[in-house]
Length: 298
Image (cartoon, rainbow, N blue to C red; front, side, top):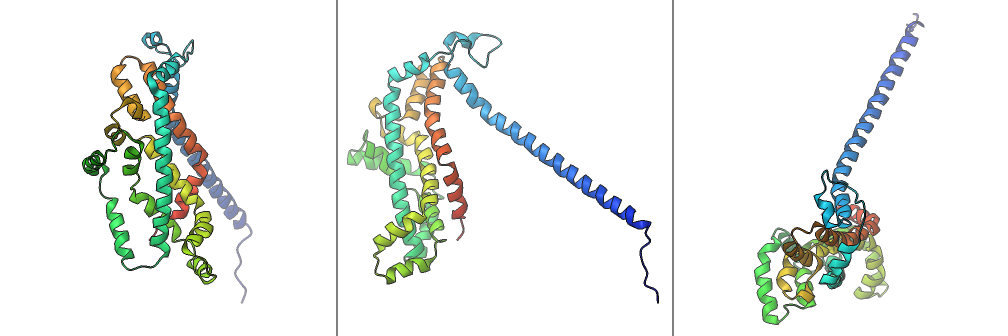
């Protein structure tokens, strides 16, 4: 019996339809990418535009704010706003913010890594209960703890001191949670092998855990530094003297005194924004890598 075959006349038609379909798919994919890029550019421009306006306003004189229509770029840029805010004590506030943010970041990274290692790799009775209590601490709003913490530092005489501002902000369950989740991805056999070789827990932590945790510690350090740098409520309560104010507090008080001087306010906001931006850009790669490797898995 003869085997049925496709006619030679139908093959070119099928090939043309396939080529046409592939061309339409590629065109749709290309149009979809273009639309995605346009949307992202518009969203990015909407995010960056207020920052550019802030930078531009920081270099304007007071008379430039009353020009209509308003100009985005100043005709005669001036640094007088920056010199004025530093004469008003912003330099001391900037130093206080560096000290407070740096100290808090270091303490949180060290304590969170130690606690995360204990909860992830050291078996002890009640470990799951401790971790559950830690997770419940993430649900407690920070504002609820402000009054007890303030009473605590008043009784200890820590008001208007660096440790009074720093230490209450160092208790963060989020840091322990991030480090614990990351440390669970490290093979336990590696730690057991070091224990068999006679290494102490401190040696294991210092020589094995710390080098492997660099992506997670960089991510945690970035989160904590940016959080401490922008903190306002607790530094405002814990430091009533002008020489102990952090930068966000100083800018807020400046806003009350110089409500009509937009140049001074924008200059202060620029000084506060640049260190945070530089920190994030410097650690962006490690931040994304650490968050991705942590995985937030149980």
